[in-house]
Length: 223
Image (tube, rainbow, N blue to C red):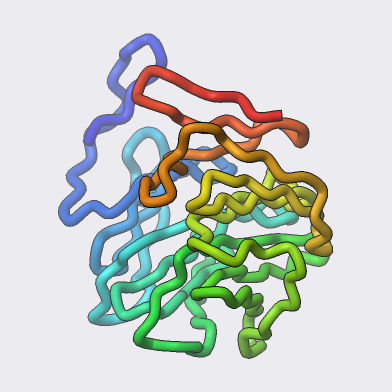
């Protein structure tokens, strides 16, 4: 793997075996996540700044990056055995795990919410049930009045300060809620198949619009 400037000047070359994902931290550190839970943190010049293992003998299915209010960058991972681990800071990593709900089931959607109190919440959906979990607190079922009855939720995407959260459903509906989970609006995307994985890279544009990747060369803006 190479790190280059926007002008193409080579900054560093890094060997990355068993790569799962790459992220940039808030302080411009390159976070390299391995498929077996090994995490390496480099500066742009290729110098190793930190390294740690989330857990021994795991295989990562998905991962999420999140940004705390104190300037730190955290990492959460979902394993192939349906466990969720997290570190609140990749530079001072102390891994922790949320208690299991159903080991035999995998969340169809999950993400990390942060708050001004520096508390982070793991939000996830399993079947028709919504759960929230925090460090040291068992997952709690949420009473969500606006959940859709048929299909499944496939993406949970908070905006930069978690005051708006988008829930993307397999029916082609995107629901926008505020931080106390009150429904603000719903948008149905036309011509979407219920069996298609239509949400591929949904992102917030500020606080008022979402961008959805339609193809490798096309974006759709949803207000």
